[in-house]
Image (cartoon, rainbow, N blue to C red; front, side, top):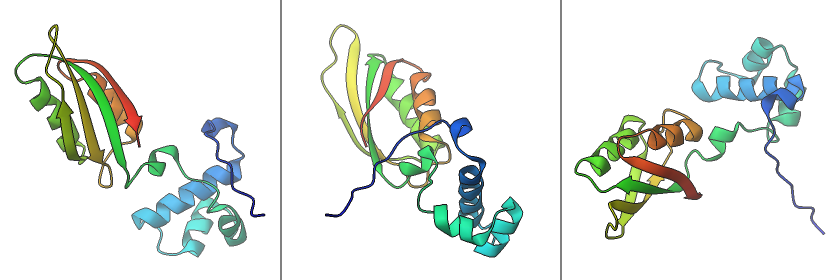
Length: 146
């Protein structure tokens, strides 16, 4: 019987330092700031063996959703320009909007679902969600799938 891995979301301050250094070494490699594993490991003051041991076990939370389609549910005020300003938030962060679904507004509110591809997004998912919540005319914003 093959044992399935379990995953947890853990606050970074609770992790042993080696995990944080491996995560940073992976970032250096991904961004091209380090050309080789050896260079990234030296910069982070870890051994290459430690890097290889933990590289598949650590992944920053915001990167877990990169390249995936995330569906947001938003409650908006039914006013001209609200949806347009909301879409500008996605555009500003390079989130590619794939679908927009809305039901007919009632009582001055519209329920909208937006699915977006986040591959090229320039901020974390948490930052995008915060910006959506603070956008003009947004009453509520949450992630419903992803």
